[in-house]
Length: 138
Image (cartoon, rainbow, N blue to C red; front, side):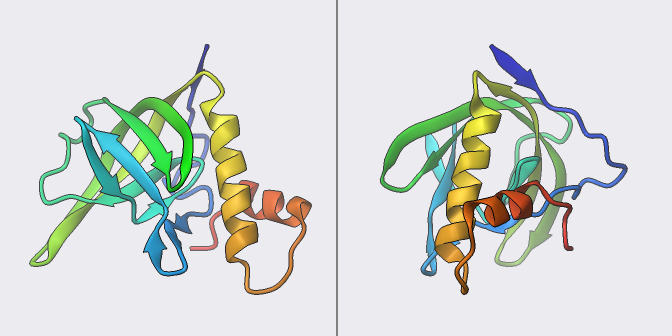
């Protein structure tokens, strides 16, 4: 079963994005063509990654999300929606088009756990779910 992703919001950042770091170290990666790339950030709508040469904008590409120390993975289809170049490299913003199987539900679980673990104050799982499902604060 696949879950088609829709973008109901006019702007691309409808949901909160979370830095893909835990204790200052990368904790989420995307696998593209056999290469493991540490993500900059991750949300229920997409991710950003370092990319001097990203996949072509508007061209769907398959991805696999993985996280540190866990054999779970999430597969789907995404597309590049933005790219910025810099002397240090560049960054590509990618939006999910489709998630395979129960990928969207597992991604929500990943992000809820990430919010709880990284919170500077104690929060409940319910509060973490509200943060993950909530609108972008940016």
